[in-house]
Length: 206
Length: 198
Image (tube, rainbow over all chains, first blue to last red):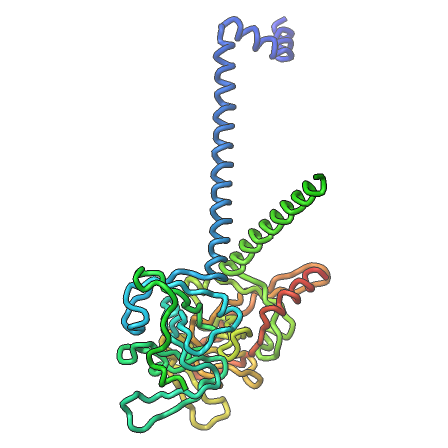
């Protein structure tokens, strides 16, 4: 007799469950607990979905911003005295990338390039000679003028402040591929906003 | 009225299509820029390591973290043509002493690699124009480090890892045969797509 009862009880556990719960008046408690668990699960899933979509949007807009800086232009803050009086210390300039990608850099342009001696640093100088040009390597005070030809695929850079500038006169011509962009506008300080001046050392452009 | 509505609908669709293309193009470009890219190599200068028409995968992470080491095969922009790429092995980093004379020369000459530069040589020494002719190359010209070569076995792809570090004993005293590969940046896309699709 007890085995039959056990079998019956196991077979109809749902009835027993309802009977026990209704007997102990904890049906509402069970419902509240069940809905509580579902709500937390839904909240957690919603939070996870929101986080993933936020990360996704950040990556998306980060990539678009990076491509804009890479192909259109970027703001650069310059430091150092080697381009005075054209660009002074702590000036902010806008350098555009279109000329560099289309290989339209010309003599007399001010360019931002990666430093050949430190891949993390950038230098800002004026292009004095393109490939094949003859450039003067001696100073203005030297008696004997020496010249050199710029090799293929290279450019000759010089700062406007010839006395206080380490440029191609010390480290030689740099490969064109190191150029990042052409400086076209000065943004800060506001009183000198606008297009940059021509080279004050015009005599050196041969 | 109906034509106007159709035209506006078409216009909106075109704008959204262009917007999506720009979005995914930018994401793909950033993936190639910061993770890695497939490159199709041409030329005999890196034989037998990399032969003509091989497709390799070059990763960008080492270059951005400045972790390029001696013995790595790198893809770099050519110092003589900003649109061309070259694929060579790094023989010396900044400050290293490298042998500039050939193996058949009687008098061995050496030079030191300047700061911020690397000395590149191809695996096929007899048929390679590299730092022995144009001098050390600035580190900033390096684009990526070649880590895998993609080989095709019938219809499946098999990845094969390149020998990264040849016998160190030979570095200081002998030059191992390295090869030069000239890679055309726009050519690789066509080749890689053709290979993957065929």
